[in-house]
Image (cartoon, rainbow, N blue to C red; front, side, top):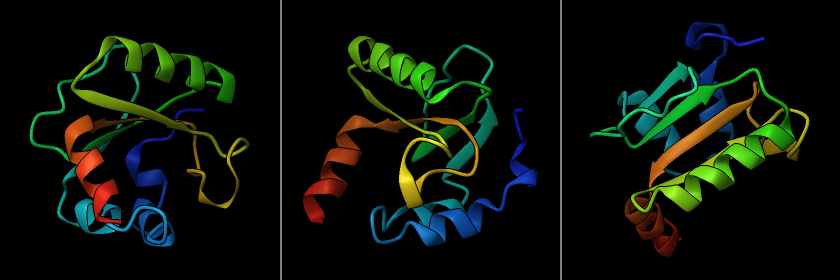
Length: 111
């Protein structure tokens, strides 16, 4: 089932994953992370730090889709998360995650 933004406590989730993604909670609080339902077509990232697309897909389907977009999109990095597929840092619902590839690389280098 696809859950809209208000049915998941995203602020708590991003606060919980600070050890692996230290910038995400601050970005979410500043409305720099959009959480929207997946419609089958990616949006332009624009000025957002990330777009989290909630999906009604299996972990396998998410992985295939993220890999497809990573092969097609030089500007964005595509990640996926599923509550049944990734341990304690998994999102509470199935998600595709779109981030600026260059910014993400810079953030990772700072860690």
